[in-house]
Length: 156
Picture 1 (cartoon, rainbow, N blue to C red):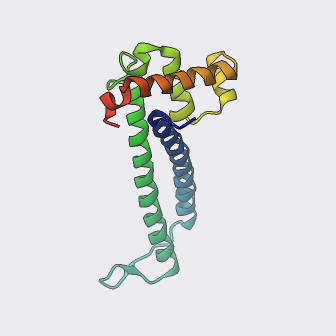
Picture 2 (cartoon, rainbow, N blue to C red):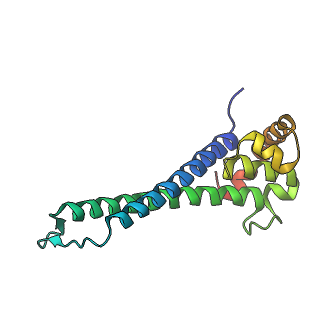
């Protein structure tokens, strides 16, 4: 069985959701480390903006890492947002997207891919057993591919 376009897209969304959470956690740890550095002031060395003291170099490294993590998180959130457009429509209010066709499918897609939840957790949240939810998920992905729905919504 080959992976459809919808499956590939939503697998990327799940990876983005996992990465976004990892970025949030790393940003929190980075913020704690910045606070640990404390009141030790630092000055950029010379006109080049290169930090010459140890604390200054650490702060510069943290600021650089923070910028990279925020950029990655933003990219992840943009992909998740595109998936939400497919699932719930452009207004993301449930009046469009997959949810207009089948609300359970929409909820399963959101929990599995946008929230990157595990099947057991999804089953607990939605009040089903795992196997039927997996079947609903597969049916939703097939429907998206067969109808070309995703192409109509996000041009994929």
